Image 1 (tube, one colour):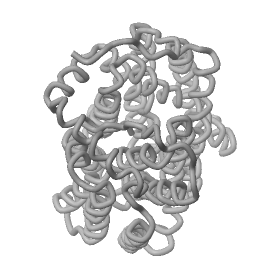
Image 2 (tube, one colour):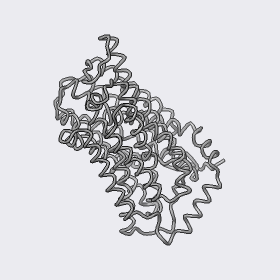
Image 3 (cartoon, rainbow, N blue to C red):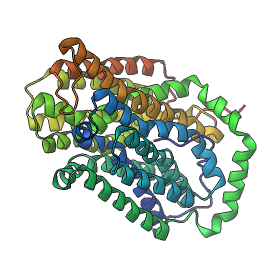
Image 4 (cartoon, rainbow, N blue to C red):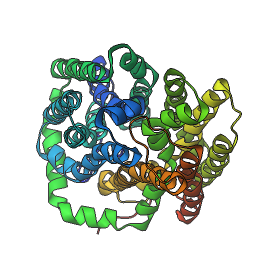
Length: 443
């Protein structure tokens, strides 16, 4: 969810007070992020329907899901350059239109190949949504408000992730998955209309400042900013940490969690999506809480280390305690989202470890590794592990009904405790900033 390369999140010092229009513009634009998180996580409510509709197994479902994240990774790099040169409002509308079109066509797809193409189109908007929202907020709000505004925008996204669970599943059970997806596309058109009516690029009195900031970024040079940010070990370590700590959101929240709970623990689909939705509620609370605790402690590294250890204990409890009831799973998945929210500390850590002029580009390293690693790699890898284990045990790969044995799920879910250990090791090598920006200057 980080900003993309080449984009300056430069706070206009002349913005001294907040007015109602600033809130309207920023929160309306935040609906774009909210909508994208519905698209990102809806597969959790559709997994069995898609396996039946396209006659696919877990590996193919994982590949289909990863198409969304692959497009995100591809378009993340040029997103900043596009936003440097064009109206933020127009970029939002174009990328949202592509997302809505991809969603609608996904509901019409007759085979796996077409479905993958349409998921790829849907994922394009995700490369622009968070960055666009933060870009607008930095123009409409003073710097002292940005932590609050950023938190609210992330909260809107997490609520979108929750909507993609039990509420969207209820719509799927009522109307069928194809009709539900098309209704989702119509909802996107409604958001587009609100953005057209309410979102403006900047306060009218700051037009000249905007042109000055744009020229400053262009003068720095695209390749130079990429090289200095993407070859910085601190940025890479923070990106890896966030990617690994975010895996429960991708693996259990976005795709495999509901199928695991239905197949292994025999919950209904409604119960399963209610449980997975708790991950997003936990993240809604955990993200600002983790940031506040880090600021209060004056430490970045310590809470990141503690978070990875608690995450390890919690995910092992979830995997190896088969007697948990519905309420216990609701609490466990809520805590999973809450604890793994220490991933958000990577963003200020990177910002404090790089030159001010390269803040956006440096923070984008975290986003690139999170989406590329967690979304584009680990989601299909989880499905491949299930298929590989199933074939080793039973000699076949299930299709349609997704009738996997317990062992296949347990082997695949070992990804999370293993990566929790790796996250702890990575965090140990991150340099402590003590919540203070370094005096590094751009080369």
